[in-house]
Image 1 (cartoon, rainbow, N blue to C red):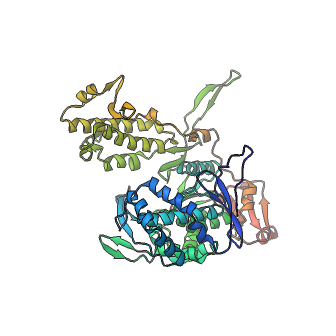
Image 2: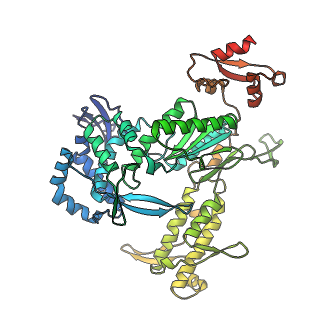
Image 3: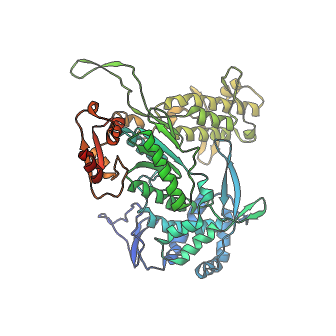
Length: 554
């Protein structure tokens, strides 16, 4: 039974993917290329939806669009069509009967910013199609369960939206930020724990078994097979979804305790409106939860507690509350002159030039540093075999990628120097290729006030010019919008009551929470509750009924 909801203009609706909880006979919303279908399924027939012709065809097209290299069998995406035509029936029969065995993933390593390497596992193209088919069915089922503060590997969400959410929370007064980082998360995922979490929602044991086979498929490292007893291999279409399902357990725990947080993949930023000691307690509680409930380890080295006045690093940006005491004057609409500290207590996103931009250029061998500390553009020997326009396009892709990523930064204009270094490194590369000078290359490719390289297409001659910072479109909503609202140190009584935590004894299971109020902080003594209020510099204290009764007894 299938239903296709139609809009008022009789066209299929395009909407976000949603699902009902998978329990008994239910329905979920299945996203196709052109419409949204309401599909009814039984408790144990989820595999039939995974292997449906429509779902498999969408998975095949997605894998073809992504291209990618082949796995251990050497089969490429270009050869996939011929392979499926020949082995389709055999493949489908093995999947339905449970006899299918995935191939091991091919281990490759890519460099990270810290000099280390990130291990990736490349499945075969056939396994990528099957994983994509499973992901397309499981994603809408779990999408409704995921936290609204989770932004990684989800439809209609991005790292920029995560940054804006973090900026918004800090603006609300969360003066301490706790950056949570897991110790080698993807490599240490406990398979039994993940399967247990999956089994709470997915009732078709055949789908659970298929996912488990992919978890334990093994790894090929330099023609040597290694078992995968733990971890989720990064590189397959199913891995991001499995990671979100696992980490959603911590999201739910943080939400249950009333904490404000933002998560992108395995990076959390939690806000605390309290003391540094409370942040340390939160860190210890999260570490214990991860260890006991998820069998994961919190990285002590990378999990940082930072005051909002200092820069906190989150998914490549620096976030801080500005303390600018500079006074500037401006004229009001009524003609009066007013002085104000325009940047004081404003939440700013900035570019970490030293840690990100400079490291990127050194890694790409775009620049070298002279003895006086200045940067000098150099040619890239690895691009000398490309055509001139291909060299320009390579530099443009790299420059545009960084500029677009950092388009929320308040110091976005500083990337102009980065574009300048990239342009002259590009010129030096082309000049070195032709054994000539930069001046002659500019003269040869002169195009008005700048220079551009012509190339031929079916539509005729086109030109490609180096990317300028003005060519990169700023985001629809930069942090300037949030800067109109000043940072607030206060958290409302309602927020504190909804957190359901006694600010005196830490009780989280009380039947009733009450607010104790005083008139003057200077009149406080040295008892435990008075000491807490003085430390917090608050005239109110949210306490459980037992603590409230004890306060008034003395």
